[in-house]
Image (cartoon, rainbow, N blue to C red; front, top):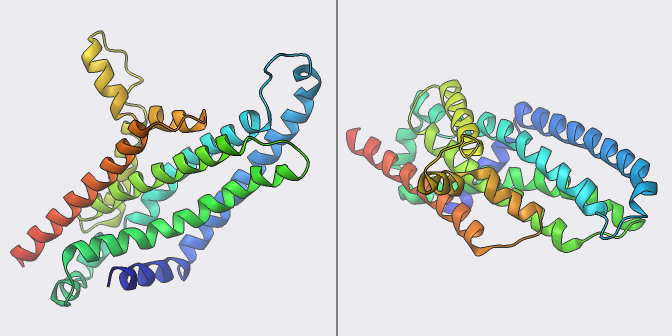
Length: 250
């Protein structure tokens, strides 16, 4: 049943003009940035040849591309998650889901996997850009795959946040704004300087950006993986609890 709901959500996204338009804009923007990064790398090649341990293609093209892609996804995800449950509540179709012979966890996971699959398609297309350079250049495939994994985990966590916030309101626009504000706050939470070491470490651990930067450096740390996994699991659990409360009220 989870896969059925996920497939339905995935099909509805790909049938939506908004989703196709956003995907085209994202790919066009990132392709333009990719070309600029390649051109900058070609201009720097003469200076890099004389350096010891000079950064390569992956460091100067793939990593910056994934960093920009993270910002783009943070802007894109609220627009595609805002309708997941807020629109269902607004049109009263959520009552039909509650009356169906399927549990709330299956509904939440189905919708989550459906929209996440859409983002995974976008991430795959983004990864193909630097991967295409393997034809004429030497890539660090470990760093490239690490960056793609980090972007995937970031998208999974951000999607879980957007899904949960969409259960709190019947207005998709409110859900989108709340999701964007939450994601930006979690991205920049460690920018504020705090004297207390304990508070500073806590804010650093909560930062989406700090954990993502580790993947861009090619460092696969189980702590970073656990952070994104637990983050996603927490907000999915909150969404299940919220929908359970709504069903009991109805």
